Image (cartoon, rainbow, N blue to C red; front, top):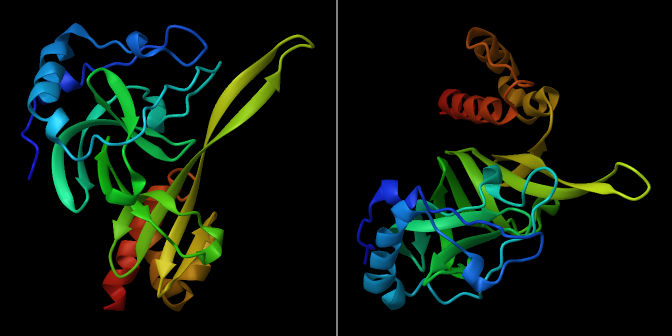
Length: 242
Protein backbone atom coordinates (compact mmCIF):
# COMPACT_ATOMS: atom_id res chain seq x y z
CA UNK A 1 0.00 0.00 0.00
CA UNK A 2 1.34 3.43 -0.87
CA UNK A 3 2.32 5.49 2.12
CA UNK A 4 0.19 8.62 2.43
CA UNK A 5 1.70 11.74 0.94
CA UNK A 6 3.28 14.05 3.48
CA UNK A 7 3.97 17.74 3.13
CA UNK A 8 6.94 17.96 0.79
CA UNK A 9 8.08 21.41 1.73
CA UNK A 10 8.19 20.53 5.40
CA UNK A 11 10.42 17.54 4.78
CA UNK A 12 12.81 19.74 2.82
CA UNK A 13 13.55 21.39 6.13
CA UNK A 14 14.65 18.12 7.69
CA UNK A 15 18.29 18.65 8.59
CA UNK A 16 20.59 16.43 10.59
CA UNK A 17 23.25 18.33 12.54
CA UNK A 18 26.60 17.04 13.74
CA UNK A 19 27.54 18.38 17.15
CA UNK A 20 31.13 17.10 17.16
CA UNK A 21 33.70 15.21 15.09
CA UNK A 22 32.51 11.97 16.68
CA UNK A 23 29.43 9.99 15.69
CA UNK A 24 26.55 11.78 17.44
CA UNK A 25 24.43 10.21 20.16
CA UNK A 26 20.78 9.66 19.31
CA UNK A 27 19.58 12.87 20.99
CA UNK A 28 21.88 15.04 18.87
CA UNK A 29 19.89 14.26 15.71
CA UNK A 30 17.87 17.46 15.44
CA UNK A 31 15.32 18.76 12.98
CA UNK A 32 14.24 22.18 11.76
CA UNK A 33 11.14 23.64 13.38
CA UNK A 34 9.25 23.54 10.07
CA UNK A 35 9.63 19.76 9.87
CA UNK A 36 8.67 18.76 13.41
CA UNK A 37 4.89 18.50 12.94
CA UNK A 38 5.22 16.60 9.69
CA UNK A 39 7.75 14.17 11.14
CA UNK A 40 5.57 13.57 14.18
CA UNK A 41 2.61 12.85 11.91
CA UNK A 42 4.74 10.52 9.82
CA UNK A 43 5.97 8.62 12.88
CA UNK A 44 2.55 8.37 14.54
CA UNK A 45 0.48 7.43 11.50
CA UNK A 46 2.84 5.56 9.22
CA UNK A 47 6.27 4.84 10.60
CA UNK A 48 5.48 2.28 13.28
CA UNK A 49 3.21 0.26 10.98
CA UNK A 50 5.50 0.26 7.97
CA UNK A 51 7.53 -2.78 7.02
CA UNK A 52 10.38 -0.57 5.88
CA UNK A 53 11.38 0.35 9.45
CA UNK A 54 13.24 -2.80 10.36
CA UNK A 55 16.86 -1.98 9.55
CA UNK A 56 19.83 -1.42 11.83
CA UNK A 57 20.34 1.89 13.57
CA UNK A 58 22.66 4.26 11.72
CA UNK A 59 25.02 6.92 13.07
CA UNK A 60 26.06 9.85 10.92
CA UNK A 61 29.67 9.69 9.86
CA UNK A 62 32.09 12.28 11.28
CA UNK A 63 32.65 15.47 9.29
CA UNK A 64 35.79 16.08 7.29
CA UNK A 65 37.70 19.19 6.30
CA UNK A 66 36.14 18.98 2.85
CA UNK A 67 33.24 16.97 1.49
CA UNK A 68 31.06 14.29 3.10
CA UNK A 69 30.27 10.62 2.66
CA UNK A 70 26.83 11.48 1.31
CA UNK A 71 25.40 11.85 -2.18
CA UNK A 72 25.72 15.46 -3.34
CA UNK A 73 27.19 16.13 0.13
CA UNK A 74 23.68 16.31 1.61
CA UNK A 75 23.87 14.86 5.12
CA UNK A 76 20.14 15.30 5.74
CA UNK A 77 17.08 13.36 4.67
CA UNK A 78 15.15 14.32 1.55
CA UNK A 79 11.63 13.04 0.72
CA UNK A 80 11.93 10.34 -1.92
CA UNK A 81 9.97 7.72 -3.81
CA UNK A 82 11.19 4.19 -3.06
CA UNK A 83 10.25 0.63 -3.96
CA UNK A 84 10.63 -1.61 -0.92
CA UNK A 85 9.70 -5.29 -1.00
CA UNK A 86 8.05 -4.74 -4.40
CA UNK A 87 5.78 -1.97 -2.98
CA UNK A 88 6.04 1.72 -3.82
CA UNK A 89 6.19 4.29 -1.00
CA UNK A 90 6.03 8.05 -1.51
CA UNK A 91 7.77 10.83 0.42
CA UNK A 92 10.02 8.59 2.48
CA UNK A 93 12.81 10.74 4.01
CA UNK A 94 16.16 9.26 2.95
CA UNK A 95 19.81 10.06 2.46
CA UNK A 96 22.42 8.06 0.57
CA UNK A 97 25.70 7.13 2.27
CA UNK A 98 27.81 6.64 -0.86
CA UNK A 99 30.92 5.49 0.98
CA UNK A 100 29.15 2.52 2.60
CA UNK A 101 26.61 2.20 -0.24
CA UNK A 102 23.57 2.26 2.04
CA UNK A 103 20.28 4.16 1.93
CA UNK A 104 19.31 5.66 5.29
CA UNK A 105 15.94 6.86 6.60
CA UNK A 106 14.57 8.27 9.87
CA UNK A 107 11.90 7.11 12.30
CA UNK A 108 11.09 8.25 15.84
CA UNK A 109 14.10 10.57 15.85
CA UNK A 110 16.71 8.01 14.97
CA UNK A 111 18.33 7.02 11.71
CA UNK A 112 18.31 3.48 10.35
CA UNK A 113 19.49 1.59 7.26
CA UNK A 114 16.92 0.43 4.74
CA UNK A 115 17.50 -3.26 4.00
CA UNK A 116 19.31 -3.50 0.69
CA UNK A 117 17.92 -6.90 -0.26
CA UNK A 118 14.38 -5.44 -0.28
CA UNK A 119 15.12 -1.99 -1.70
CA UNK A 120 15.06 -2.06 -5.50
CA UNK A 121 14.51 1.60 -6.50
CA UNK A 122 15.14 5.01 -4.94
CA UNK A 123 14.25 8.30 -6.66
CA UNK A 124 16.43 10.83 -4.82
CA UNK A 125 17.38 14.40 -5.73
CA UNK A 126 16.42 13.94 -9.35
CA UNK A 127 18.32 10.65 -9.72
CA UNK A 128 17.05 7.09 -10.01
CA UNK A 129 19.12 4.62 -8.00
CA UNK A 130 18.60 0.91 -8.60
CA UNK A 131 19.94 -2.02 -6.63
CA UNK A 132 21.85 -4.11 -9.15
CA UNK A 133 23.76 -7.38 -9.07
CA UNK A 134 26.06 -7.44 -12.13
CA UNK A 135 27.01 -11.05 -11.39
CA UNK A 136 30.74 -10.42 -11.59
CA UNK A 137 30.74 -8.52 -14.88
CA UNK A 138 33.81 -6.36 -15.41
CA UNK A 139 34.53 -6.40 -11.64
CA UNK A 140 31.39 -4.34 -11.04
CA UNK A 141 30.33 -4.47 -7.38
CA UNK A 142 26.82 -5.39 -6.33
CA UNK A 143 25.00 -2.37 -4.91
CA UNK A 144 23.19 0.83 -5.80
CA UNK A 145 23.74 2.34 -9.23
CA UNK A 146 22.56 5.66 -10.63
CA UNK A 147 20.51 4.74 -13.71
CA UNK A 148 20.96 7.44 -16.35
CA UNK A 149 19.39 5.63 -19.29
CA UNK A 150 17.29 2.49 -19.56
CA UNK A 151 16.55 1.21 -23.04
CA UNK A 152 17.88 -1.56 -25.22
CA UNK A 153 21.19 -0.20 -24.05
CA UNK A 154 21.61 0.90 -20.43
CA UNK A 155 23.82 3.48 -18.72
CA UNK A 156 24.64 3.04 -15.04
CA UNK A 157 26.95 5.06 -12.81
CA UNK A 158 28.53 3.66 -9.67
CA UNK A 159 28.88 6.50 -7.20
CA UNK A 160 32.02 6.18 -5.10
CA UNK A 161 33.50 8.26 -2.28
CA UNK A 162 37.11 7.89 -1.20
CA UNK A 163 39.04 9.28 1.77
CA UNK A 164 42.09 11.40 1.02
CA UNK A 165 44.52 12.52 3.74
CA UNK A 166 46.19 15.80 2.82
CA UNK A 167 49.25 16.37 5.00
CA UNK A 168 49.21 20.09 5.76
CA UNK A 169 52.08 19.96 8.25
CA UNK A 170 53.98 17.44 10.32
CA UNK A 171 51.31 17.73 13.01
CA UNK A 172 48.15 18.17 10.97
CA UNK A 173 46.45 16.41 8.08
CA UNK A 174 43.21 17.41 6.37
CA UNK A 175 40.61 14.71 5.79
CA UNK A 176 38.96 15.08 2.39
CA UNK A 177 36.12 13.00 0.98
CA UNK A 178 36.42 12.89 -2.80
CA UNK A 179 33.75 12.00 -5.35
CA UNK A 180 34.54 9.35 -7.93
CA UNK A 181 32.14 7.82 -10.41
CA UNK A 182 32.46 4.98 -12.88
CA UNK A 183 30.22 4.95 -15.95
CA UNK A 184 29.05 1.64 -17.39
CA UNK A 185 27.35 1.15 -20.74
CA UNK A 186 25.44 -2.03 -21.42
CA UNK A 187 25.69 -3.30 -24.97
CA UNK A 188 24.13 -6.66 -25.60
CA UNK A 189 24.65 -8.68 -22.45
CA UNK A 190 27.91 -6.99 -21.41
CA UNK A 191 28.67 -3.89 -19.39
CA UNK A 192 31.58 -1.80 -20.64
CA UNK A 193 33.39 0.81 -18.54
CA UNK A 194 33.39 4.19 -20.29
CA UNK A 195 36.11 6.59 -19.23
CA UNK A 196 36.79 8.50 -22.45
CA UNK A 197 35.18 9.57 -25.70
CA UNK A 198 37.32 6.96 -27.45
CA UNK A 199 35.91 4.23 -25.16
CA UNK A 200 32.39 5.33 -26.02
CA UNK A 201 32.95 5.32 -29.77
CA UNK A 202 34.75 1.98 -29.65
CA UNK A 203 31.87 0.45 -27.68
CA UNK A 204 29.42 1.55 -30.39
CA UNK A 205 31.79 1.17 -33.33
CA UNK A 206 29.14 -0.32 -35.61
CA UNK A 207 27.46 3.12 -35.71
CA UNK A 208 30.57 5.25 -35.30
CA UNK A 209 29.95 7.54 -38.27
CA UNK A 210 26.38 8.35 -37.25
CA UNK A 211 27.45 8.90 -33.64
CA UNK A 212 30.20 11.33 -34.68
CA UNK A 213 27.64 13.29 -36.71
CA UNK A 214 25.14 13.22 -33.84
CA UNK A 215 27.66 14.52 -31.31
CA UNK A 216 28.80 17.32 -33.61
CA UNK A 217 25.25 18.34 -34.57
CA UNK A 218 24.13 18.43 -30.92
CA UNK A 219 27.37 19.94 -29.58
CA UNK A 220 27.83 17.11 -27.11
CA UNK A 221 31.00 17.74 -25.12
CA UNK A 222 32.18 14.52 -23.49
CA UNK A 223 34.83 16.20 -21.33
CA UNK A 224 32.35 18.76 -19.99
CA UNK A 225 29.57 16.30 -19.17
CA UNK A 226 30.67 12.67 -19.43
CA UNK A 227 27.57 11.15 -17.89
CA UNK A 228 25.15 13.21 -19.96
CA UNK A 229 27.12 12.49 -23.13
CA UNK A 230 27.05 8.73 -22.62
CA UNK A 231 23.32 8.73 -21.83
CA UNK A 232 22.44 10.83 -24.91
CA UNK A 233 24.64 8.79 -27.24
CA UNK A 234 23.24 5.51 -25.88
CA UNK A 235 19.71 6.74 -26.51
CA UNK A 236 20.58 7.79 -30.05
CA UNK A 237 22.35 4.50 -30.69
CA UNK A 238 19.23 2.59 -29.69
CA UNK A 239 17.12 4.83 -31.92
CA UNK A 240 19.15 4.20 -35.07
CA UNK A 241 19.63 0.53 -34.27
CA UNK A 242 15.92 -0.34 -34.34
